[in-house]
Length: 129
Length: 152
Image 1 (tube, helix red, strand yellow):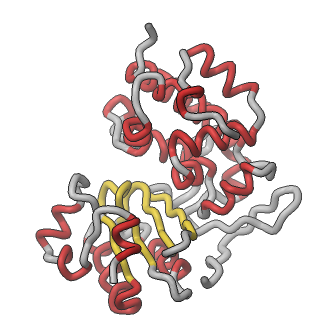
Image 2 (spheres, one colour):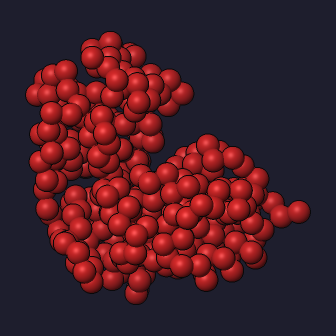
């Protein structure tokens, strides 16, 4: 895929619509573009970036719903921050999230428990125009 | 390189099983994530991700290392080692490490010698711990994975 990070910068609703409808290979590619393969491996629950490379070529990831949601909030974050800041937001402790880091919340906890919190924190970081 | 220790296989529809360290989500955990509200199992403090690069085997650490997961940390380092390439432990995204984690690093350094490389950027709060214990010099701590891989 030749899309650059610029094309993944979206508003709140667009980010949701895109993340829920895009092909999984594109989801993974865009996440890798925004966050890097190692972060995508963490979110995807695997221990090797090799698995992430396989997802980009069509192998089905184990946690597609988590990856889709990760792209939704990554796109929101990218609307007001460059790659470095987006990566820092994902891996850093966040006071809005009880000092947990979004990336480990995505990896460790059931998605339905954290979706609301993470979306709210992302919206706060990247307010809509 | 030596294949990672297979703790729990998770099969997908086609290829070989993916490998997980014991701190990783097991197939049962995936079921939990997609189904009910039970928390996933132990080892949730840190995520360890292995990356093969052209110049080094890199182990990325996300989260915290303490007594509860140093055994997994040690296993992951051991699994990453074995080839002729250097082994880079990247603590860029590690937010906390205690004395048991430092001990694991010291033992790994003794075992791997010059093949052992460590990344702890200056702006990471845990860097101070390495400075205080004078391990910054002992480990020849690098600022980035690229710098660590290029060390001689």
